[in-house]
Every structure is written in structure tokens, then in C-alpha cells.
Length: 309
Image (cartoon, rainbow, N blue to C red; front, top):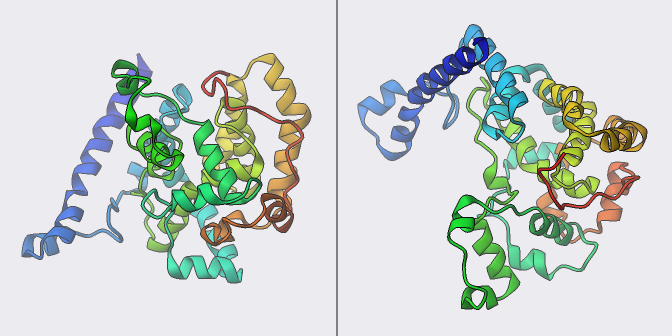
């Protein structure tokens, strides 16, 4: 009985806080006096919360994320409400790195609107950009829309170039893409909010660098790496509790090979948020790993049955 009540209260609190962000849209769409008076956010989408509200959001989102690790909205809330100190540490590392400092200054975003899929598709195999595109291709999961409204096999749309097919699936499938990452709302510092946003948008690039698919074992391995690399409590929680959802065979693989490899590489590698990935697409993924001091994975995982544990 306690869990449904807790989740119900979390949903009500989340709704109330989200309603406060309506004024953000007014700021960008109107110059009215009302917009100027009601908007008190530090950045578009920001929702101010008290320490008590943050604690409630952290508790509720943590419970919801444990129930369903694919609730990315709850995972996002958990990360924002518990990661202040870790974000400060990451920001300081980026400031002390020339490439990281450039990222903080220019504020690039990794979105479908900023990705040139044609360029990525034209890159040679083994390049970082081509391997990233391959990662996206291999980690598509159909939505209810596609299952209920399948396109015929002879549909002309499916005969177009692979680039157009990628664009089509981005629009109609639940792809693993930067656009599936929620915008930051609860971080009470504009620069730290960008650091959190950047972390989310490079998460899939880490999957590519580490050679990990998005099934449960792959996600847990990435979380072990991220926990050692970033110190974010959300990552540490996922690293500790994620293995509980693995079967015996995958647990053995995690504890004997993937886990130690992820922790070691996460701890010793260069700050992965200090890499301007958008300018590294043509670089060999092997060279990029060497530059970051990341070893290739000891076990090759496939992207099949990505929701299986």
C-alpha cells in the first residue's frame, strides 16, 4: 500500500512543479508583462524546487526507476535532484581541459537536428561516426504504432536510401537517440544544468565507445563505467542495483570481466564529457579509445533482445 501512495504523491508533486514551467514558454513566445513577471527560472525549462521537494522527488523517482529502469523520465529526475556535487566536479574537470572548456563555452547540443546522418553514413567502417550510426541502427525497438500499423514490405518508402530510412525510423520508432533524453529541469545552476544535459546526450556515444548494447547487461556495464567516471549518485545506484535484474549467466559475466573492466577504465580514463565528439566523427574509434585511455571490451555483446535480462 505504501508504494502506490508514494508514487501517487510523486506524480502530483511532479505535475505541480511542471505547471510552474509554463511561463518558460511565454518568455520565448511573448514579451508581455505577465511573462516577465512570472518567469523566475535560471534557464528555459528550469523549475525551482526547495530542498524538501528535491528530497521527495529523489525518493519517488528512485523507487519508480527501480520498478522500471526504462522510465527515463524518472531516471532523469533522480539524476538532477541528487547530482549537484558530482556535477560541480565534472564541470571543474571540463574547465581545466582545453577541449572541455571549449564545450562549456560553445554549448553544443547532440540532437537529431544537429546530426548529419548522410555524413555519418558516408564515413568508413571503424570511424567513430560510422560506428555511432551503426549503434543507432542496431538498437531500434518498435513502438506500438509500428506494430499496429505496419508498412507493407513493398512500400516505396522502404526502398529509398539508407539515410532516408534512418530519418524515417527516427520519426516513427522508439530509437535510442539523443532526442529521447529529457531536458534538464531541476538543476539550480545554469552551467551545471548544461553539464547534466551534455552527460545525457553523450550517453549513447559512451555505449559506442565502450562497445555496449542497450540490453540490461550493457546498460549496467555502462553505469559501472559512469559511476567510476562521474561520481553521480544516480549512476552509482544503477551500478549497485542494476545487477539484481540480471540472470546468473550475465551476473557471472559482469562480475568476472565486464564489471572490473568498466570500473578500471571509468576511473583512469580522461573525462569523457571533455571530448568535442561532434568534431571527432571521422576519427578511428580505436584511436579515440587510446586517446581516452579506454581499453576495448573483454566481451562482445550483441544488441538482440535488448530488453531481456
